[in-house]
Amino acid sequence: MAKQKIADGSEVYWDGAQYDAFNQPYADDMKFLLAEAKKARGPVLELACGTGRLTIPLKRAGIDITGLDLAAPMLAQARGKAAEAGVKVNFVRGDARNFRLGRRFKLIFMAFNSLQHIGRRQDLEALFFCVSRHLAPGGRFIFDVFNPNPHCLVRDCDELLPVAYYQDPAGGGKMLVNEQYSYDRAAQVSRLTWHYRREKDGKTLKKSLNLRCFYPEELRALVHYNGFKVLARYGDFERGAFSGDSLKQVLVCAPRAK
Image (cartoon, rainbow, N blue to C red; front, side, top):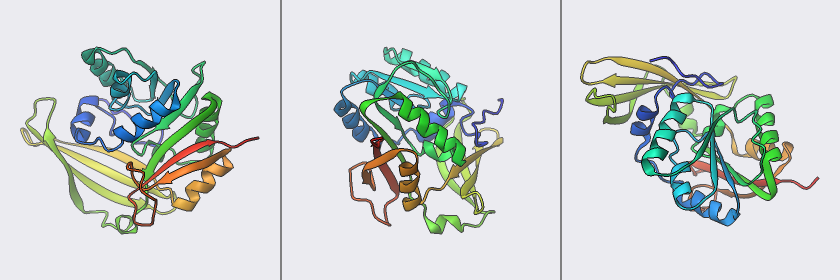
């Protein structure tokens, strides 16, 4: 299959069905985001919506939601899943750093570490500008990223660790995914290679995944200097207090008064 890259060179969005099979058990953020979407009392926009893992069930729950993503294979999967679920979702192909949808939203969210695909200062500024331009009065911007773990940043770059084992949706039996990791200290980016190995024929595909690391105080400054304020910061989707031991940084933000 043709490689599907996003702006930072990540290729793991090459196939929507493979992506869903890989991530199928993940549902940690659903309850949190559904509660926030209901609290918003208005239209919702999901940036980097992928295959509709969140968009579709939120729509089924009665939320007026639009999904935007850059990767065509992910959106194709999302549209197929929405049709199968019997719901109509407005899925838009677009870049979170540069989009115009002609309407405003009470909630914009970017889930599942997707902000970590945006590493350059100019791109982050463009993202926050687009979000601000599309927020209705009183609107909120919510996103989550990993809390960097120093132990991961010093992993052996030749080490392969298994990260997924699932039934190949393409009919290749089981698919084993091993991860190779290196940390680019200059760019502050985790550079991963996922080795997809089909057990049926032994064929292996390699796909890149690049994730910018955002350190906690850096992230708060980033939000501030892009015209937003942090209303709440959690360490998980159960609204637990953020600490140095937290695996996640979940931020609820709003534009600062001008």
